[in-house]
Every structure is written in structure tokens, then in C-alpha cells.
Amino acid sequence: MNINKKIGLIQKEIQESVNLKNRVREELSEKIIEVSVILADCIKNGGKILLCGNGGSAADAQHFAGELVVRLTSDYTRQALPAITLSSDSFILTACANDFGFEQVFSRQIEALGKPEDVLVCISTSGNSPNLIQATRKAKEKKMKTVGLLGGDGGELKKFSDLSIIVPSHATPRIQETHVFICHILCELIEKELFG
Image (cartoon, rainbow, N blue to C red; front, top):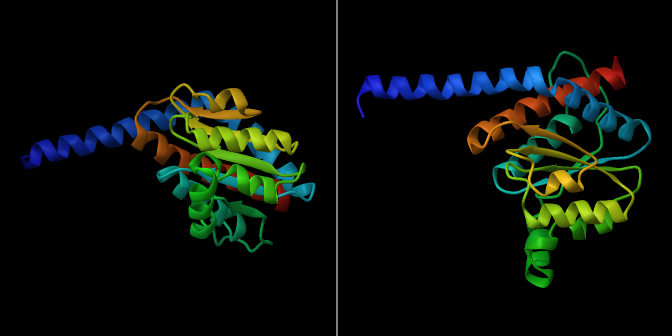
């Protein structure tokens, strides 16, 4: 591939990302606000945010939890916010997958940790991961609210989530980078709601 084709590829990828973020701005701003209110209210009411995803979405869940527990920016210092990623503990994940099957790696943790005042956030580009669907079902049993951060048409998770933000794309890289973008916005809205 020559230099001009490489530059063309880069410009195409960047433009796709810009176009998608513009669609998010136009189509999803109100949904993002609604989710931020659910998450801020969860914390105000003494709950915690449980997050899960697979692969790149697991990394996005960890990233979001890290921003909540630590802080988004160094503009000001605030107290840590209660957020836990269910995809981080390799012992629990592998023991559960071995003993009960991979479909239960998140639902088993929700059974152990989930309370009615908590919120489950499932991050998925397709919305069709069986372990995330099982997690949402278990959260419902525990009377928790559920949020989907999804892509494409939202998949099956859309049906099981109380509220979903569905990135309007079927391109996994574009969905994932937009999920991180949305998580940063959510974190900023939550911080401003809780700390002014």
C-alpha cells in the first residue's frame, strides 16, 4: 500500500468516526442525560454501579469504572464513586466458567454482590452476548436497574435493559470508540450532578 492510499485510509477512518459522533450528538443526547441521571441517583441512594462486557467492551467497562472510582480529570478533587467491573477478577471468571459455564460469569457475581439500589451497566457492540443477557436477567431478579451501552440494533440486550444507549453503527471499532466517548460524557455529567 503506497503512502497516498494509507493517508486515504486514515482520513476515511477519521471521517467515519466524526460522522458517527455527530449522529450521537444529534440523536442520543437525551438518552445520555437519562442514563447519567439513573447512575447519579444510584450513587445518591447508596448504591453502586456494576459494569460488564466482553473483549474490548470489558476494557471499556474497566475504563469507565476507573474514571468513576478515581476521577475523570484533574480539574478538581472529589470523593471516589462506587463502581465495580465484573470482568476483572481472573480467578472468579475462570472458576465460574469452569464450574457453571461462561454464560454465568457475570450473573454469578451479581448474585453475590447485587442489591436493589445498584445499577448494572452492560457494554456490548452486538447486544447478543449470552453472559450479558444472563447478567441482566439476574439483575432483574435482584430488583436492580439495568442499562445497556450497545451498538447496531441493540440486539437481545435492548429487550432486557431498562434503558439503552444504542450507537447507530455496525462497525465494531467505531462502536467501541464511541462507547468510550459516551462513558467520558456520562462520567462528567455524574460528577457535575453530584459535586457541582
